[in-house]
Image (cartoon, rainbow, N blue to C red; front, side, top):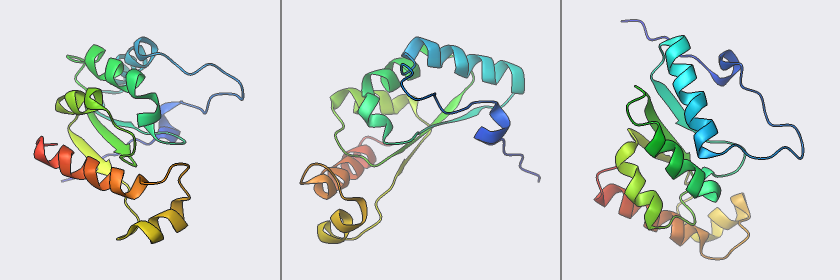
Length: 135
């Protein structure tokens, strides 16, 4: 069969201008519903410049509000800094992809240069907890 993939380039979405306010969960929900209605697409990927978990409250609200929209969500994340709220919301996500570019903390730190120590362990804990929850 043929698989048609629409990309962000096809969506009409553009990066926010410098200094612009980040969208709210309600605004993102409206965008998701509009995208699904206009294109018939069902797949929506949550990612951005930086990790979406940095805006965990917005991600969770978007996922809750977009229930029933026909969208199937994929969350692309580093898996660092997640709280219970994101794990509760993972049930609303079809697929979780965690970027883990190294097999040990030293190489991870060299490649990603995280602000906080323990990011590798945090990412690994996220993968274990997400897998245990069925995500």
